[in-house]
Length: 210
Image 1 (spheres, rainbow, N blue to C red):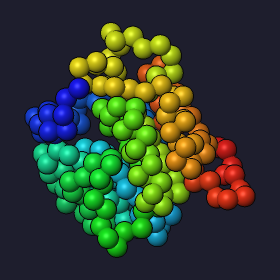
Image 2: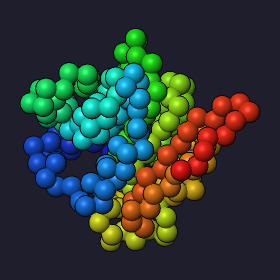
Image 3: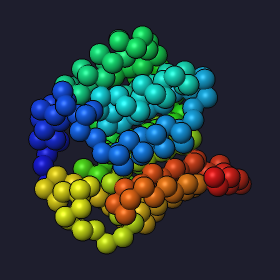
């Protein structure tokens, strides 16, 4: 699989045309991620693999603060320009990755989001990424991504073996559970695309399923 540096370079090249290249399934996932994130006005949302800011800029409208992290500086430049054009000041875009999100010291992360980014990680690294979200104290993790609800067909448009390593929904569900999240929503957008919502399990209580 390509290295992090390879992925960063590939997305740097795509930054200018990235927004116009997205599929209907990607846009549906993005909307579902924002809907399920549902931050309170005083909460901080960490969006990992933020790209050009599709999720971070939208959740910033309802959150106290949004923190967008990505490995591509060109994508981050696009996100910062969007924030400037829209007058959104409660968002911070910077370098970071799933296992090292570089969250500001003063930020208490309440919600973690990610859309169409985690599938570049191996299953073991996905598990680590979800654990990092738990260790940050997030009460909710909303993941929209390439994920396998059925046997994968490499000819389908969402799965490219050269750069993608999607997990099955079962593997992701186990990773959420092992990190202390209860899976409260599963949105199937396509056989290979969906949204999972994990809620922090408090001792002696279970979150309501949606």
